Length: 147
Image 1 (cartoon, helix red, strand yellow):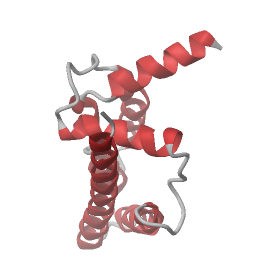
Image 2: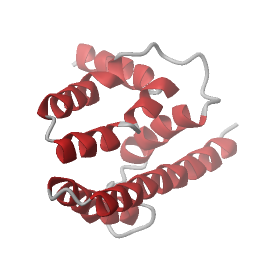
Image 3: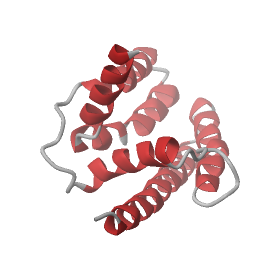
């Protein structure tokens, strides 16, 4: 049990490095490119990178970077406030809306429809950034109340 808790703590500390978060923002465009171009090795590499990314970087020195607070806010939202990430309350509804946007982006990439792929991919990324920005605002507001 203790080693599991230690691993989780190490995982979240390393994942909160802004390099981890910002590099993950490139995964959707890379996967869409791989699907569009039928470059399955690129897709596999992107998936492998997604899996190992959270532990690739050292923990950040502080939590001043916005992307660090994104990760901390996501953890806070799901663990401390015990919120779901997929329901119809705000901001979770943004994740729900992201499902069909990302799905359509992949279908458009598979069908080789470049404009639809780019548009749906951009909508998906915008929804994700909107979602995490809302979480960061709530997280920052909550931490401002704590002495």
